[in-house]
Amino acid sequence: MTSQPDRGTRSVTVLARIADDRVEALRKTLREAGTPFAHVPGVHVVRLVVVEDVVAQVRPAVWRWKARLLDLVVHAGRGPRPDRLPHPYLLLTATVDGPQERFFAGMRALGPQADAIWEHCTGYPGSERAAGFVRFFVERSQRADYTFAGAPGGTVGELREAAGMRRRLAALAAEGNAGRVPALTTSGPAPVPQRPRAVVSEALRLGDIQGMVLRGFGHHHAAAHLFLRFAGPDAARSWLGELAPRVTSAAEVQERPNRALHLGLSHAGLAALGVTGAELDAFPDEFRAGMYAREAALSPGRGTGPWAAPFDRPGAVHAVLMVSATTREILDASLRELRAGTGPDAGVTVAGEIRGDRLLADRGGRRTFVEHFGFADGLSTPKIDGYDEGAGDELLPPGEFVLGLPDVDGDAAGRGIPADLARNGSFLVYRKLEQDVAAFRETTAAVADRFEGGAGDVAAALVGRAIDGSSLERCPVASHVRRANPLGTLPGGIRLSRRHMMLRRGIPYGPELPDGVPDDARERGLLFLAVVGDIHRQFEFVQTQWMADGNVFGRGGEQDVFTTAGGPGARVLVEGEPPAYVPIPRPLVTCRGGEYFLLPGLTALAALAGRTGR
Image 1 (cartoon, rainbow, N blue to C red):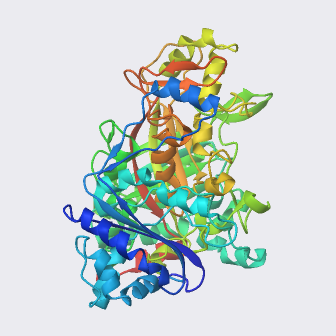
Image 2 (tube, helix red, strand yellow):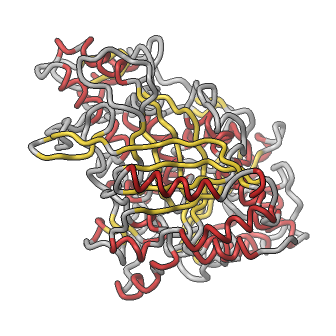
Image 3 (cartoon, rainbow, N blue to C red):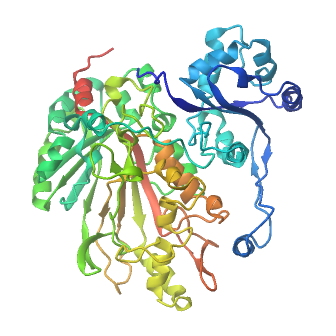
């Protein structure tokens, strides 16, 4: 297993359930004893907070007139509803030097002082049992989406603000200890350590990384995704042994091949290949659970109700085989060849297939890729240090997308996952998003008379860009583009946004619906593919905190219209003089299924194929 680096400053977050009848006793202990853990060696900042059954959402005492006007429009003067928790929790947040296990061992050395606090939490073993003590905290540790500014640059006010933003814990506490801590936003994480470019470049083993991780194959205009199931480990490994050498590496991207092949494996797929239980348990919670189990939080109010085969039950898809090509003819030839190697005799069956095609249109005087609502797509993507040209905040550490390499925290991405499975791999977020083009056109037309530019301006306000992809002079605060990447508009500025970026590799599916043509009831939409190094911090954070929740943008329960919003009574506020509501009577986009996959490095694929039963 990859160990946590021994040096460097990192955040530690522990969320432990308090026994229901012990809250007042714990409060009394904290008032009298304070926080003794501040004396543990290597601690910069530490704080304990009791998270109660009801977490009030505090509104500012002083408002600017625009903020007060917006609050009156959105909330009608009523305060936001509280977030109700099923149980009280004790939250420990700290910034420490070295690995968290060292900090936990230092807490144990306090003996009775530690016991006096943690004995009020369920499952606490006491400080006398060294292994049990550390395990108690490791099991309740959460990967935090923040870093305290314990070094120069962070103020006491910022630290107190971060520790006080407890309402973000409501969703986690409702899940118990199985979830992870949503972000407690501060002025931003510590700066990414500067490394010599030559060292980072050397770390990117292009020949071992799947090609789609570093490039999107924009010259490929046709794609097909085959969803596979494995009948048994021996047959599946034999099939994988034949396939693995054909998977396209990042080293081949520069040659602009006319076809490409990539393979993703779900947690259920790794199990079907015979990966051991201990290895499977080392993967992050969200990957182990699978997207089906997470969808209730990702799509509030909908869950997996609209999902269709092959995603209609947990673990139904073991692998996704992604083929792309410059032409349909080349794609079809590749598919015939790949399908010939599957079937009941091969122990690998095709559970489903989706085809995608690039859509081209004239936008701003040039031919560009568009999605089904007509907007230019694929205009910007994060740059990777050591691979792309750029400087400063333009470049993200490679570990944001490639496991085993440094991420924005300076940690090795995917630490804890066995190296022979994780090294040079990535996580793939896969979602089939059906777009209701007729509903989108009806929605924008219904309020067109309230906008100077008519329906086009309505659409641009909802998306956050003009139809040709150009930026708006005043991008609406809660538009889709701004929710996906708030840039410097939220506390924490650009450093906060850097923590939640993804490499998008999607492609439209289904036929276009020309302007003026009635709804033909045919399926069309976007195959959303995102490459990340941390599913929770990157994809799930953006989906749950920025897309499905409007609080951070001052919009209460208002959701993004292109991911979760829509239905009776749903509406979106568009700023202006005066502001206007856009009703969303039915969903514009509906998720029809998805899964989390591992994109193993090519060496890892070969090793998986060569395993024998254990």
